[in-house]
Structure formats: C-alpha cells, structure tokens
Image (tube, rainbow, N blue to C red; front, top):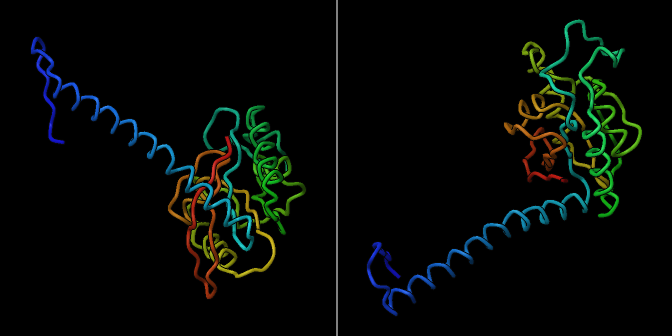
Length: 206
C-alpha cells in the first residue's frame, strides 16, 4: 500500500482518501488481532489446567501498602506482618470463583507460611498446607538455593488427576521461573519428570 503522506493544505484526492480508508481499516484489524491474541493464549492455558497435572504457582493477592514485612515480623503472629487488603481478599475470592466456574481440578493446596499467602489460599481454594520452601525470599538470599531446589523437585514431579496449587510470593516465583508476577497472577508450570519442568503460561483473574 505504500506510505501515505498528507500535508496540511493539500487537497485530498479520491485516491488519497481511499488509501487513508484502507490504512484505517488495517489499523482496526491489527488492533482486533492484538486484543484477541492474549485471550487465545489464556484459553490455551485454562485448557491445560482443566486437564490437570500442572503446578500452579500463585502470588498472594494485593496487600496493605508496604514492601516486605515490618521489623519484628513473626510468622506465628499475623498482626506483625503485611497482610491482605480488602481488595486483596475480594480478588482472592474471584480467583477461586474462576476455578470453580471452569471446574479446574485441584488435588493439593500448598502455601507459604506467611499470613497473606495462607489467607489468599484459604479464600480461593480452602484449607492450605503450609510449606516452608514457598516462603518469602525477599531479603533472604541465603535461602534461595535450598528453596528453589525443593520447588523445582515438586514442580517437575509428574502427577495424574488434579493440579497442585502453590500460593507464594513474587520473589519466590521469580527465583524459580524468572517471571515476576503481579498480585494474584498465576504461573503454570508443566512437569516433565527427572527434575525438569517448563513454564506453560500465565493466567490472571481480574
């Protein structure tokens, strides 16, 4: 189609008008395709988790303002931690509703021992099992190698039936997958066995 240049003050000929109309139509088509591509990718990943056997890593839902935890934080005392906001609690509930609406099978629910993760898991899926390797790695680089090794072993384990859901922190998901997810975003990992796995995609429930 070439490049259409219209200079202010120049008369618009029928040919120029036709080229402009075609360019506008092409832009509309490209915009529609760009919008449709993520939706198709989402449906592919939803189909994968519907079939079961995946490790679904979920970052906890949105919290009250802050980074990390307050000084003196204790795992046994939620009042000393940075916890979910009301918006985060509602978002966690929507994640669970999306799983139920799509009949996504879940066989096991594991969570970081941090209260914001436990609450996210509980509101979305029910009672979780606290699991230390899912703990927050933010500011704890000395724990990275040990935790990533345990997470990789579980993520690579082939399973039949439902999925395993792992509610954790952005820093922990990033250490395992290289992906820094948004709050309540899911990173789906397909186990390949023998200590190997592959990131199959990401899912977000709004």
